[in-house]
Every structure is written in structure tokens, then in C-alpha cells.
Image 1: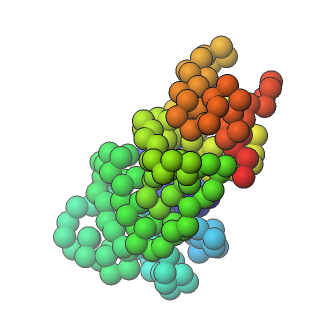
Image 2: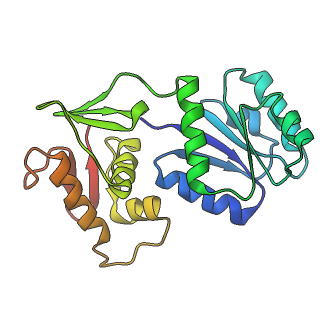
Length: 224
């Protein structure tokens, strides 16, 4: 279920928090700090997030090259330049244009819209035991009774992160840092509590989980 994004941003501070935020939302992100290898790195990606002000090749040039190489690849431009001329120039090849500063939730929402529009999400659900996971709709249904399972935002982030790494054993540190974006402190029970609540909602028998497995001494995984 992994959705791979290419993110091109030369500002280390902005790039770091956007990269961490998107990783926490379950995306696989390749972050470049210039556009020299953008066309090469875009192979296999579902969407490009592209800053305008880059060292060397500017974002407009990079974007035009990307669109020529991958006509169906969605491009989301980011820029502190707010003039209508800049926006119009960007929208000649880009699919959306977001001005800085921006809230991470708005960026995530725009990414979701572009991915849905481009058909990147499968319309077929992922089947996990008794669960039907509709990635395109951010929806989980219990196939035993047909009822939708409602998760909190953080629960959904954790579950999505596990799904993006389907079949892989993830350490508590990896999950915590991927979802919260902060270093994991040994002994912190936050993740364990969230996993317990997740299991209460997702598992047929939370005491004997089939969806979210505990790998003793290591962490957790969701098996396909």
C-alpha cells in the first residue's frame, strides 16, 4: 500500500518537518534538496511536491522537465512567491499551487485530492482477515457485520503507518518516530496504549490479536 512521494525542497528546516510529517502519515518520501536528479528520482513516484526557489535549476524548470517525462504525474508546487504571475506560470504544468507558510494538514489534504484525482488509490479494498481497508476513502469496514470502524486521527496514523510497511516488523522506535516525529524515549508507554485501543476496535479478540501482531522484544507488524 506504500505511496511514494518525491519532495524537492532546499530549506533544511522546512524540508525536515514536512518529510517527518508525511512519513508519519504513512507516505514513503524521497527528499531532494535540488532538482538535478528529479527526473531520475521521480520514476515510480505517485506525486511530486516541488519548491519554486531551488539552487541551480529553479522549480519551474524542474517542473517542466518532470511533466515532459511523466505527463500523468501530479505536481504540487510550493512557494513563498504569491504573485498571480508566479502562480499562473506554475499552473501551466503543475496540478496545484500552495503558498508558504502553510499548515501540514492543508498540504496533506491537497496531496490526498491529487492522488485521488490521478487514480493512485486502488478502489479495491485491502482484505486483512475480517477487515476491508478502503485506502482511497480512508475507511475501514468490519466484514463480519458490515459496520464501519471509526478511528481517532492518531489511531489512523499508526494503522496507516503499519499498512505502508505491510508484512515488515517495525520497532517501537520506528513507529513512534514515524508517527509522532519525535525521538522515542525508552519506557514511554504512549504507543503501547494506542496499540491497545486500536486492537479493541480492529480485532475480533483483542486479547489474541490477528491483525496487529506483537513481535516480542522487537515491535509490531501487520501481516498481509
